Image (cartoon, rainbow, N blue to C red; front, top):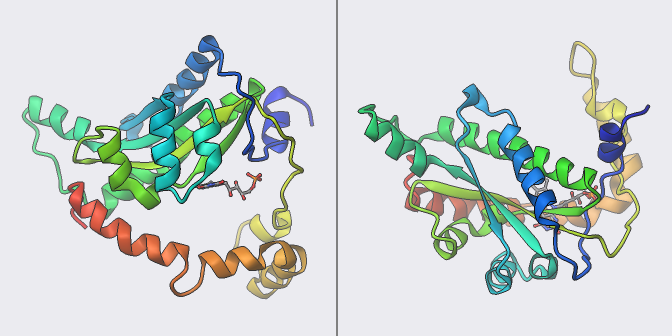
Length: 235
Ligand SMILES: Cc1cc2nc3c(=O)[nH]c(=O)nc-3n(C[C@H](O)[C@H](O)[C@H](O)COP(=O)(O)O)c2cc1C
């Protein structure tokens, strides 16, 4: 395997400690340009990126997402927002009635935000910066209000970027034979056995915290629904 891009991708690890040095302005523009060039459904491009450089704002966001210090300490935090307020207003201007922002809009926006943020993350890593995704969807409405994100738009994911001050090892993943199949979905029993054999020790605590009844995902599901409705989604 060769090539800078594949090398960057295969060496990815989340970085949660950053040097005080900021990000070179030209590099930041290149990173944002990568966000702009990312593909989006139908080429519609309704994703907005807010570059949060103000430390006091990052501090507040760090608290809102459960006291994550790296959010405060990273020189830059990017917030990726499904920007349907912009879409709605543009449609109004050209006399087109917007459809209900139902689950279809939500799914499309979430996938777009994932792709745009991934392009951005890889661009930043390829320039030598460290990144860490931040689950801002857990406090979407509070963050929307803090950053003046209009009703109709929804911040869903964040990315800290900075010069790394740590080099963690590569974190484990399931074997390729668990996540990649050819032509048809593989044997579920095999996938279960191989996943447990390779990840159980590393992941069991996380699985119990996140995936169970009353776990993180279920709780986010309960709060995000209210927030989605507050932000004007028809769900
Ligand atoms: C959508 C998404 C949300 C995440 N949210 C957080 C977060 O809020 N805080 C954090 O420290 N890491 C977060 N992460 C990073 C993951 O924990 C990390 O990618 C995973 O543990 C694997 O580690 P690695 O990135 O070093 O390979 C998030 C990752 C993704 C893709």
